[in-house]
Image (spheres, rainbow, N blue to C red):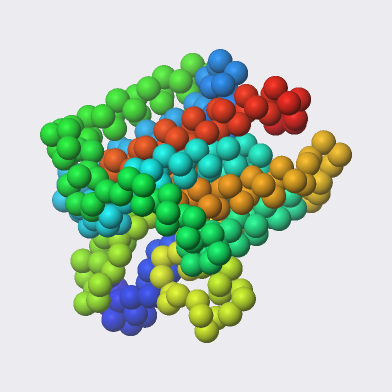
Length: 354
């Protein structure tokens, strides 16, 4: 059965949800087994080393860039249709939102995707922070935090289209994008094998983690090409998916129609859970004396507000948007790292646990 038959039999929404579930399950298992974590990568850099966690993150990021840019060069993905480029954006939102998100992930001990991975491993601290994150995302989209978010985004707006496309602005084009992606992947291999020697299994896991983002883009683009309805091409992003899952849990009548995000979040959870069970790492963990509840709650609020203001999280904007070379996505990724580094220094100076 080909894709057109699937769409005719099951409908666009259900096929998109299945695509999200496939991508999410692979990402969840790969990210769990490799301990993929942007927060840990930032901390290693702040401590003046490129160790285990940084090398895994950078190798996954390089694989993500190569996979997506290969799709673009082959004509299987049109980044100009992606919301990171086609829709209006905000430079002020990307920078300020990224700074908020970066600071928040230091306090919560993980970004949005990492909190989901840890929740599936039995970490109740991450589960609580993830719930607060989802509530804050929804409040920032259409609730009492929305006016503040709209005001900050209006300080430096940006039109959608070529102005948000780094490859167009720089004149590099698709070939230049693939060259830059290959350079990122090669440096990723350099840092990885400098740290991990011959751990090919871990390298495969990091590559798989990054390539799931290319898989998401490719699947949604293929569905959009075969569908008679308007389908938004997308890939992994855990902020909007978290808010959508919260709405489904509270009231199915007001929840959005089924789509990619509907399958993404639960499948990521299941993939991580299976990875934890296979590795014997599932263990219930609550708050300990050194884990400050206030830090988790404040961090979750900062991440939720920052993710909506910036247009995504470390995976959603930083990797998914960065892989199509969206200008605001790259600004968000840089701001997340800067915000996390600043928060790390403040935590260290205050003597708080990191």
